[in-house]
Length: 283
Image (cartoon, rainbow, N blue to C red; front, side):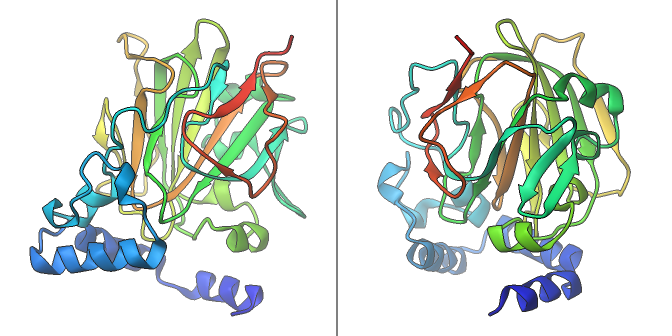
């Protein structure tokens, strides 16, 4: 299928309906039917179940249970670095933020303010900073972890569209990551200052969840929602779980200027593994 036709179908697809139906299927406890679906998925996407804490496909009660499966202990050791990759996936884009613009793909950029839900004050510290956009494919491990130590300060659920976030769509749909549904998590690091992790929803992403809140977008009311955690001590260590996708997507990180020098081996479309070196502080 040509990229142009693929993008046209994305515009025409009833994405909310498809996502709602996919979420119901993924959450259903269908016995043998669920096991057959999981077995098909493992074969279709070549999922490596040997890394899972529980490799027994038939033991998962629902597709969501399988999709958010934990890894076995020691499967992803943390690199000796200031910042580590928070996911298994592939690099969509990364690098410097041009004033307040982030590169999506050749010919497409979006603003930090749009990404975080229109809050210019929240976006301001990241002008001229750095970003990393990591894409999780269907075969990947779908829990998200902390790139460094951080204390949760705030969370924002931004309603939006549900376009696919694969590389073809990133090249063809303007403002993709700032128009899709997303969850913005604002952290404060004792060493690195404020940083942001944005969990971006997509077609058939049934829900997004965090350890401190549970499922965030179960009802999809269409209204922006915010939570303030400054009166709580929700502190997560580097490598600790901070979220999960109930069916795949993208995480985007924002860092302040002069806060990270990225791994010199990183490049767009390169695969990454949870815990590998993402970067270090300058100097």
